[in-house]
Image 1 (cartoon, rainbow, N blue to C red):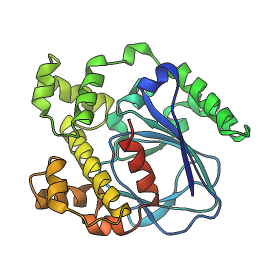
Image 2: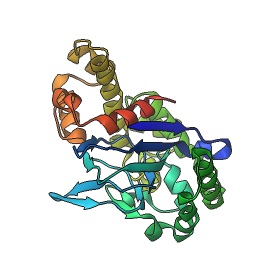
Image 3: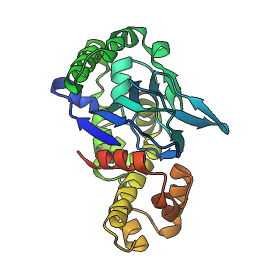
Amino acid sequence: MQYREFKPDGPMARFIKCYWMLEDPSPSAEAQRIVPDGRPELIFNLGQPFESLVNGQWRRQPQSFIAGQITRPILLRSSGPAKVLGIRFHPHGAHHILGLPLHELTDSVVALDDVSVRLHQRLQSLGEPETPGDHLATLDHAINELSQSDRDDKLLSAAIAKFERSGGSVDVARVADQLGLSSRQLQRRFHDAVGISPKLFSRMQRFQRVFQAMEAQTMESERLDWVNTAMDCGYYDQAHLIRDFREFSGKAPTALLAGELDLARQFAQSAARP
């Protein structure tokens, strides 16, 4: 499996965390677990689309689609040689580009032509270029065309930055007050532009922070220090940590870190980078 990321240039960097490409000519049929990170994505398959487990059945994903916020784990498996081009948005980035209320996409995978026919048509040419640079130039130009400045909510951007920098440990009411908003106003803006509540988003940031810390300890063959790691990341105790792990990953921490994580590890490492 080869995974690469490319940083956007210019104004799109405010709304797009990265472009990424995943290539796997001989993928395993073993299921891979993806956990919530608070960021929607646009996915374009240049190879065989993955299958996702939905209500106990494996279903093939669309060729190109928008994946909204996920609040629970999802399982994917390969259906053939994979070549995937993706856009990982900042939490409010997809709303800025698409103009949709993001709560309508939460825990959903929606074919791109059902969301934006214009963008879908522009991205059909992605099957032709030979290099990642050509793909990215096409993507960047198409996304730029859809971007609208009147959707740029600077107060919301500031709130998201505070939650991310704190690892989800800052109080929602305090952030709202610092920005001159009521808690209800911040809730409403988050629901519309991010797709989830600020409280849930904060919990995801805390989960990602401890997940990354534990993953690093595991990769370095260190003994997991549950109590100190949990406390450092804002958890009250180990039980509190385990509850969040079960909600967001479907497994206890030791079981999660033991397998099903090739894709999740790539994305977790990306989330840890600024």
